[in-house]
Length: 487
Ligand code: FAD
Image (cartoon, rainbow, N blue to C red; front, side, top):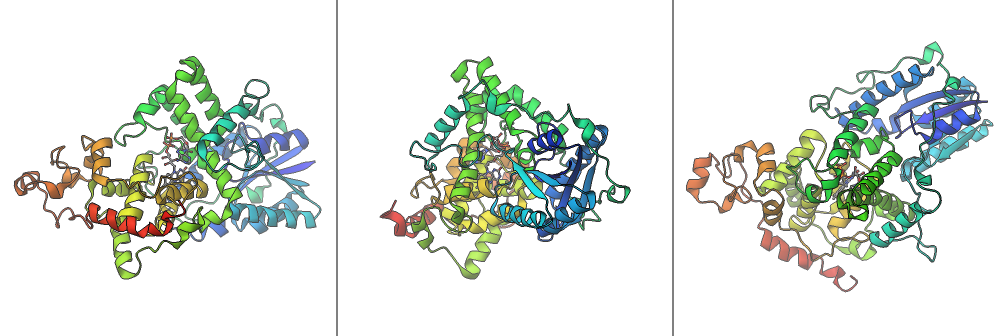
């Protein structure tokens, strides 16, 4: 009769599977979010993600209050807090949307066990994906490990059944009268300070938060979606949607995004609308990596392809120094350094640049991909274990459907191709702003007079390159020789 909806990475009140089912099955519905000490305690301070969540919760709480309910927000260990809260509120069951990360699965199992012991239940629902890990399988019933056939099967399944049946929004309005206000003692929402965090620069950066922010970005991107395939690779161009952090925290509904992509494809030229079709592919990549992590949990710590675990990476003080230069954007390769400045200053990095810096760390500096993966996990606002791991293993060539090991990005060529006018580099490395388009990609190749005119002193206001790409390339091919026979 009484339900508790536990919000996690689904910070919205509309098109929400768990909220919909709780309202449909119960007379009284409480809502809660736990700032989980098990996660928060290990985070750096400040952390933009905490600001993002906090701002999004403030909006969600107001929206639920407007519907007659409340959002109870606690700072506690979720595994204990949820069963205790269910008991305190007299809830018979807890409703939540499924989370597919290994740590979350374990947490949910523990919560379910504790609830069961007290005669209560945990009901979980598919919400953050269109198809769960076992819903798209090959004809022989096995999981895919190559993207294109997975995508084809995904699209085929989407078009089975009544039009857009998989994309129906979950109604949460018609029974909103059942939302319950929280007891007075549970109405306080902890401030950032009470959570032990100082504010980050998220608001200064004007990164839109919450459901309104997500909707605004989607509307804005909607206008550009049909050009996405042409603009997505150029970091100085407003090409992608910037919705990743909203997908991460569920301030947008993935069903709404897929509906929007299909609408654009249909309004345009059917399959001819390459922009929308390409963007839809990216949303499918997201589900592909969820599926890979689920079926191959070893990828969290090991190469997807076991032979790649035999690679010997650089180690010791030498490796640590190279890694620190990469993290701090001091490699002497402008595109790499500008990209690292972007992640360090904003928590976002353009997809093309994620590929470039990952390749540079692994295949130019010879550093274990897991070091880079960990750094991204700490910095990215949109950090998602499965996509991050998938991206890093793709760059390391150790992943499923990864780029071949002998394909090694040239950081200068990438720069010339994707930031030809150096617009992105100039934005993040103002000390190079006066260099010509010809020299900005590889300042060490410029004549001393050109450097002087531009006010660049290599080794002083901008580093000399820490490695020579051609030599590094040869070393990498040797390093990867251990996997040659099996690839
Ligand atoms: P758009 O281009 O507008 O794409 C729309 C959405 O599709 C994204 O928001 C994202 O949810 C999904 N998507 C796009 N590309 C990918 C992809 N390659 N894999 C999985 N999903 C994708 N994405 C994350 O969400 N979290 C991560 O932690 C993450 N780490 C990455 C690490 C590396 C080394 C690489 C190469 C890629 C990583 N990506 C990650 C994928 C991709 O770079 C980002 O999703 C994208 O840049 C986010 O910007 P956007 O929302 O503007 O993307």
